[in-house]
Image (cartoon, rainbow, N blue to C red):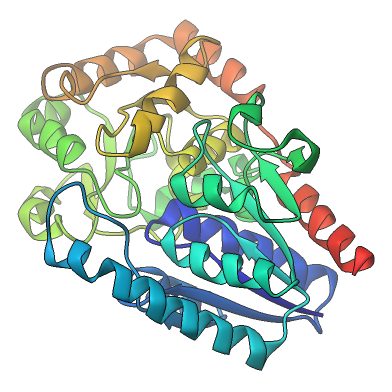
Length: 361
């Protein structure tokens, strides 16, 4: 069988697609898989690093202001439409799968128009623009939150949860290995700081502003800044504070962590639930329809996470994290409640739906 997967722009779209590809390959090693992404975006690096071929489209999202990119947008749409058709005719996929992002819009839309079986996976509690448009055209829609009928036809939807990397499940046996990998003090608790695949300016500034407080707290800190910010913050890499632009071994980072600070992307939340981690979420205000706040609130109402607003983070984030690390009762409550939301079999369920489309074909 042949499959095209497309999703990009951020790790939240790329890594679910990779997880799905890995499961397809696990079930049938003879499957042929091709990724389609946006030229010059991170998927063009991350996908080959995970062993898959990728084709690039000249496409980008619309900006919220007048820019050269926006003026070129109609031409990019036409160019990506032509290129997508060419890829589909050459590769002849049995199913095309989209996990969000503007590149997936082009390839999934063209596949649906050509009568090829199509499926999309929506990670967030508030559907992205690309997936909302595609929902009317595709054969199946896998969602990660209940109550998504406001965005998609109910008859096409299957509640699956978010696909995550298998190595994040059952990580506690890796703790000693993780402590050695990151060169941590095994007698101290560990705070893991994440800003999403591209990094978070707010979270980075909040940590840097309180760096002395963290140094005095007698804890380990694993801090992923994102490649864009590493030059500014790598000077803080000393002692118990470890600073990285990107962490490839995320299973090890979660295994070492007692508390996680993170943006509230849907994939990050799914990973923290499966990893059973107490977390402080700082929703990004720079996303469509403020969907990260909606993601975070879904956990806060179930006492499964603590939310700090982007505006409050510089003054509150570090203090709240340190208080949580000392409060064993609250740590246990958060871990218990977030683990109850975990879907360990999400990737398998999504692949089940893909294979149903193959059988119908």
